[in-house]
Image (cartoon, rainbow, N blue to C red; front, side, top):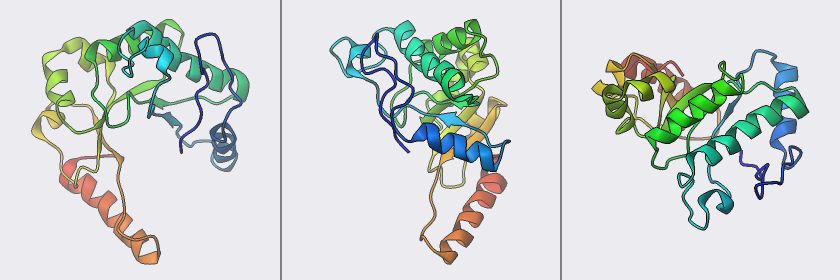
Length: 193
């Protein structure tokens, strides 16, 4: 689900807005081994300095994301395992590398980066051409991949995920369709999640 920003403006930090904190804690109670992920769907305007583009100041945007991960731990004792870049939007290779650098600097080496939560390309070919980008990304995530992976994604040697997918109907038949999609993603596309 979506939640309000933890930083409506630069000096505003509130880690109790929204229901997602409660939801993650309840999930951890039921399954302590559940994996927690975050994926920005949008960014507050102050990050773009008047533009709706979070890549104006890469360090500031990375700081915003890292503060959320640190706040999850400090205020809710939640360890975020994976972080995405920007839901179904263009990625910025320099931002991904800056995010990795800031995560590492803050002692968050265990937090893995998923990119780009959109299509297999151009992230896959970009990773093959940029070794530092390749090192920064742990998982290539595609949305609605149709059970297939592109060659360049396979060539990266990274984990491949369908990081967003769907089933046809929302009933018992839909559960079978969901199982079929997950199995076909693995068999046809080498996707492990």
